[in-house]
Amino acid sequence: MEKSSLLTQSAATGGTTLQAGYMSGFGNGFETEALPGALPIGRNSPQKCAYGLYAEQLSGSPFTAPRTTNERSWLYRIRPTVAHWGQFRKVDAGLWRTAPAVEADLPIGPMRWDPIPIPNEQVSFVEGVRTITTAGDGGTQAGMGAHVYLITRSMVDEYFYNADGEMLFVPQQGDLRLWTEFGIIDIEPGEIAVIPRGVKIRIELRNGPARGYLCENYGGAFSLPERGPIGANCLANPRDFLTPVAAYEDKDAPSRMYVKWGGSIWAADMEHSPLDVVAWHGNFAPYKYDLRRYSPVGPVLFDHADPSIFTVLTSPSETPGTANIDFVIFSDRWLVAENTFRPPWYHMNVMSEFMGLVYGQYDAKPQGFVPGGISLHNTMLPHGPDVEAFEKASNVELKPHKLEGTMAFMFETRFPQRVTAYAAGSEALQKDYGAYGHQLKKHFNPNQR
Ligand SMILES: O=C(O)Cc1cc(O)ccc1O
Ligand SMILES: [Fe+2]
Image 1 (cartoon, helix red, strand yellow):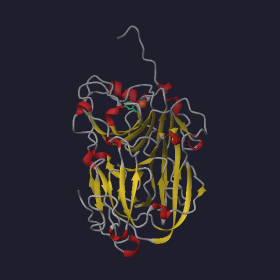
Image 2: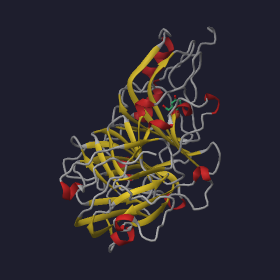
Image 3: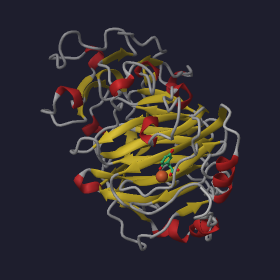
Image 4: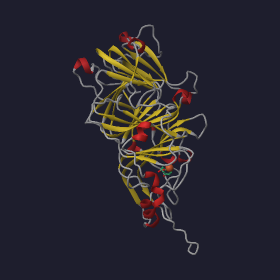
């Protein structure tokens, strides 16, 4: 296994610049150390750890979970987490909500939003999360929160972890540096990052204000979907997932720790950085993935397949095949199907569909669904291509056609999604979207086949 070759001086005290460095693979048993010999060999808990470090286990699954879903890592750190622990007080959660959040009537109809504007005020990640929908129940570890994040300032001596769920970041504008306990992850629009439940982070801007989507997964950890008859390759390939090598801060400074726990946000003051993990090993760790590496597989002769063929990651529920959340993308691909209406079909779905657009155009909705925007097609509510997409796709010459420069995605959950009061009252809500179906004309003529 690759060992960290990162510089090990503290970013704060040393003046040495830390860089992101990664190990490849999905769910591997990784091991990495930022100081030589920091990782104990052949055991987890030596009587004394090298360099005076503390050993700490972070359990992402029950101890007894089957091997395929068992997740834990061992962290060798300057102070154990309990030593960072201060006097916590509940702070204003802003517009971050957790299921169940019954604030507005469950809408019976499609909903769509323009991009939520990035504010002029200074907002860090913790202050800049705007919940759009919630589904399931955070307390029973089922469902999700679907959010937009807006960031105009980096976190300085501020740290955060989420006990309520793992976090899937989908940047839409602006690059982010995620300083995590496990190392540094840099992401840009077109990439995603997953921060497991309980992993401490600090988020910095890299090139101006940032906006993106955030899926807070209360349920089973995201995993790669089965490929079935597709075989051993294509879709998201494990080697394209990147987990950071160990990097730590040895920093004593007045700091603040925020924790999202039980649907509330808590804060405590402390005197040092908690990103003090010098070495770690295990399979419970953050990762990033470049969505442009996704290799789509689709219909090569006729018909439009179900969108599940484009699943990047799936959060399983206890019912096989019924995902807590599927993260699905609609990225560049060739459309070649003959005698086929090529865009998504009209349909009603027991799963509910939250969609976003990172860049480009989405083929079912060429107008009105813009980068940074959001659409919601809830449980068993009808939807499909708008009139422009229908007319075009019904009449176009069916040559091979490449959809290019596009990246839409869907958080699809088994649970109905509740819209927050914020999203229902937002100026970004498109008031007339619910009526797009009315523009579809009647074409029926019993005398003409
Ligand atoms: O509603 C949508 O746009 C998402 C979607 C895409 C697709 O290709 C098939 C079904 C589906 O729900
Ligand atoms: Fe759909």
